[in-house]
Structure formats: C-alpha cells, structure tokens
Image 1: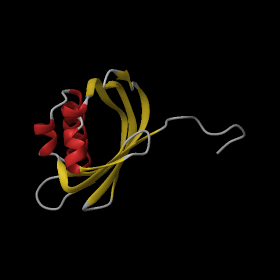
Image 2 (image 1 turned 120 degrees about the vertical axis):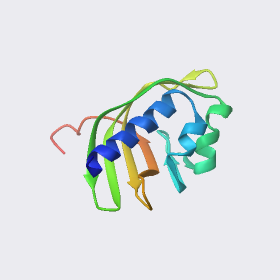
Image 3 (image 1 turned 45 degrees about the horizontal axis):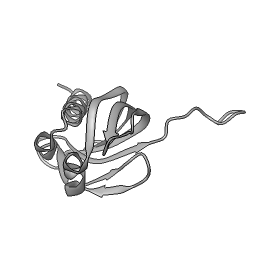
Image 4 (image 1 turned 180 degrees about the horizontal axis):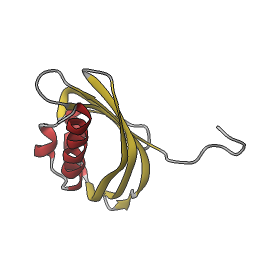
Length: 128
C-alpha cells in the first residue's frame, strides 16, 4: 500500500468514526496534540473534540468527498469536501464544507493532527 492509500484509509476511518459519533474510535486516530477548527472558527483541543458527541453533537451522515492527498514525507495535507447531516443540541448544522486535514506519521502509522472545516463557496465574481 502506498502512503497515499494509507492516508486515504485513515481519512475513511476518521469519517466513519465521525458518522458513528464514536469518540472511542476517534481516540485511536487523533495525534496527541490534535487541534480541530470548526465551521464557525472555534478551536478545540483533542479532548474537546472527543467530547463533542456528549455535548450535543449528532452526525447522521459524514462523508469526505474528493479527497486530494499532498504528501510531504512524514506529514501530509488532505483537502476535500465534508458533506454532513449534523445537528448540535437540536439545531441543524448540516451542509457542505471545505475540509483540510493535516496527517502525521510519528511512528508506524498515520494520525490526524488537525482538522479545519470551513465555508465552501465558489471564487469571487471576476475570477480568483
């Protein structure tokens, strides 16, 4: 298996754990110094990210579409689209968002070091 395939496998396992609202599975996929940035710009530590499900977050679907791996040796950046049906404390947070994952390989396996979920929109009128 190539590094790109290993990284895509990690992305698939991470998305499945998110969809299943499973902090136990996520725990084994996140680096110790993980940081997550949510779609509204809030920043969460690893522990806070794992606690989201107990604090009212519910993912009904969570898919990473069109992931593109940019391998840099012991680290890689994955850019794709997060397509989710999600609610937080009963309020709908569903949508399609730009997703950027930073993954690292500190030892024998890839781990998610950071997640950034942000707005997804086209380029401004008149070009980029």
